[in-house]
Length: 367
Image (tube, rainbow, N blue to C red):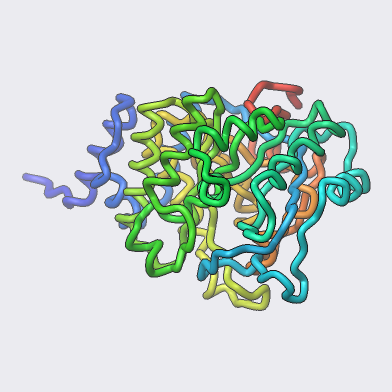
């Protein structure tokens, strides 16, 4: 008797075999996984890949989020953080004002300042350079993880400098690495529809290419869950995978779950837990040349973050004192989390918490 195996099961088995052999998945494979409802199989494969790369280690960092200005010339459809100059709630801090804020929240365990903000055209490029200098002078041992690729493109436009020259100036001021933001979905069609009024796809990638060529190791993100298709998400992953093949400069890929514009938005306005876990797992499977996939608890919550550790995630970000951008867009999660809670979260998933620095050097193992 001949047993007929459904086509989808054959395709899933073919992907399983590729994963077990360590072969690269195609864009078509990625789209198929997104269309599949077999989350457990996808998660098991992602876990297999992650265990080969990182074992049971899960990384976190003590960090603080800093925002020098929320004034922004861009009007991206998904952003509720930005303000116009003079609008109620708009602000632009001097270096001294930021130091005063940091002094109130800083403790000696903080290893990284995560610095992003608006594209404020009312101040010169030197303002952004001086902001880093002020932090570097007061906190010389804290890594400055600063600015998105879109901000670097903005700095290039207002200064007349090339990407490379902008980055060189910032490195002299103390820049240690770029943040991953500004990627959203790397599709020009998507960016036009969502009024992503900043760096386009090629500019985003070229900023990171220049950063890698200057010796910076950087982060990259994908903001998913609005109007983009599964094909566009996979194409986004393929684009950063190709740049990673070229430069090897990315440390981690960070899928960011889109937050609704209002904190009062119901569950139907948010990505489902199923979609969030699937995206983390597929990211792990597609991005074979990335060491780490991050589960960002600010967007998906601490419990789902814990589950994601068995589905390909090897990083849970950090303690993040006072996150604002996702919360201004409607995130319901805490604005920060204690080291003890992060350690508990990781151990609860049967994993080993590793406190790290920005560059994934291990500081302490909590066995």
